[in-house]
Length: 101
Image (cartoon, rainbow, N blue to C red; front, side):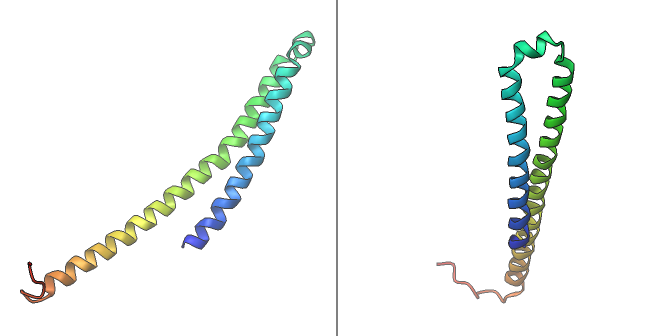
């Protein structure tokens, strides 16, 4: 299970990094060229492009969060199963199997 999760998590982190890079690059270029953008009245186009890049960056972030939650859920289920089985076996053992001291 962990091998399956790690492969997915690494790929999602790589995708998240590439989309974040495009977002940061666009933001930096927009700030550097703010005077030119305003001079040609292209603010709306740059805002639309920025919000599109934010949406593209949010998607892999959400999937990464969901895969982490998937792993947590599976680990909690396994832990509950082991704990329940251990408690059940201890309840079935005859009295005096474990010494109190």
